[in-house]
Image (tube, rainbow, N blue to C red; front, side, top):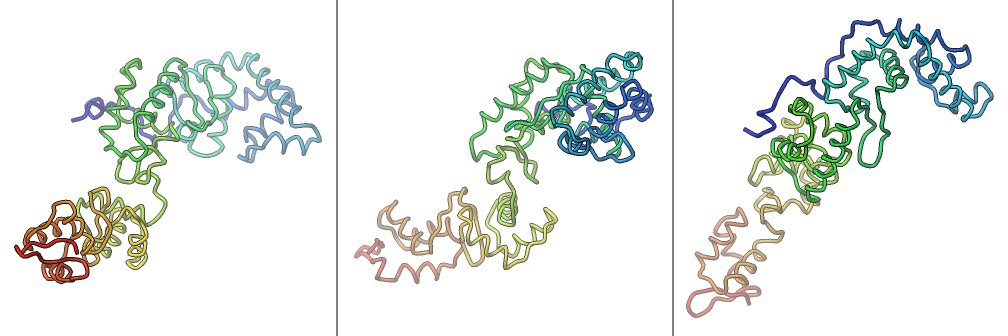
Length: 359
C-alpha cells in the first residue's frame, strides 16, 4: 500500500457534492446589497450576475450601456464592495462567512475556482452569490490563473504557498515523457508536503491540489506526468491506441486495438482508421501480420531482413537456428519467412562452416 493510500480520509472529492449551509444565500446577498447606494448596487448586481439573469457582465459591457469608461465602472464596483464591508449587515453575517471558510478548509484550504464554486452552488445563480461572498470578505484570497496554475481560492496563505512550492518541485522532478502510476505520484507529492498540516493529507485532497497545476495531469488510465507528455496529452485515436497497447503489455493486432479503445475508453474507433494511425505513429512498430508493439519496449522499425542484418551486425556470423531465435525476439513471424529472407543472396551469404553473415 502506498503512503497516499494509507492516508485516505474523509475529504471531499474533486467533484464534491454541493455544500449545505445554515444560512439562506439569496436572502443574505439581498441584505448585503441593500446597504449599497443605488448606482453601485446596480453595478454589483450586473458584475456578479445577482439579478433576474445569472449572466455576469464585463466592465466594458456595463460601461458601454451606461456611457462611462471601463475604469469608472471598476471604481464604482470597488466603492460598492467597500460599502458592503462597512455595513452592519456585513458584520452580522460573520457566522455565515465562517461557515464558508470552514468548508473551504475541509476541501484542503486551497481549491481551484471552478471546483470550489461547483461545490458551493447547485446552479449558476447560487454560484454567483457565493462568488460575491468570496469577493466581499477579506478572509478569502483569490489568485489569478497563470501559466502554471488555474485560478484558485484559499483561506490560508502559508498552506497555499507550501502547495504552490510542492507542485512546482513535483513538476520539476518529472522528466518530459515520464509517466507514473497514481499511487507513486501521490507518494512523491507527499514527500514535497512535509510542512503541510497532516489533517489535509488524504488522497482526495491531494488530487484536488494536483488539479491546481496546469503542468501536471493524468490520462484515462490514472497515470500521471507532465501535461505535455504524449501519454498524458490525449488528442486522438493514436493516443488512445498507445494507451490500449501499453495497458495490454504485449503486441496487439490493430483490430483488437480498435476494439479495446471502444471498451476501455468508450471511444468509437474504426478498424481502418486505427490501423492508419498505428502506421503513421513512430511509437508503434509492426512486428507481425497486423501486430503492433511499442517502440519503448525496445522494438525497432524495419522488415524481417533488417532485423536479421541487425542481429548479425551485433553478434557476428550465426547459425540458422540462432538467427531464427534472435529474429523471433523482435518479430512475430514464421520460421519459413525468416529463412526466405536469410537465403536472399543479395543481403546474406552462407559461409563454409554453415553460419550466415551479411553480404
